[in-house]
Image (cartoon, rainbow, N blue to C red):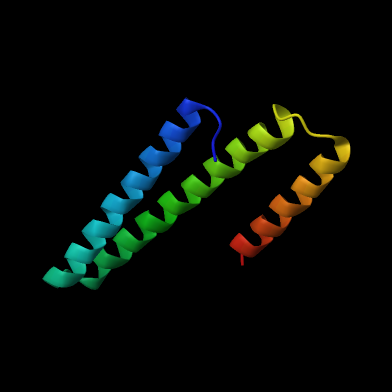
Length: 91
């Protein structure tokens, strides 16, 4: 969870934008839009989700590793966790 109100606001803004894109995709499918328009919408959603993931990773690293009160051992564990998460995300 983002610690600062600004980080939380930015993340929620991105989520709301993604929700709008998914709603638009649903409308396009229901109305029989051409496949290329649907594919473009899916690509936009994927890009938005990737942007959200990147921002959340940045927030997490800042909150947990930079400004958080963690020991060296705790930082190593957290780095391993984020590494595992990123490998799974990138599959």
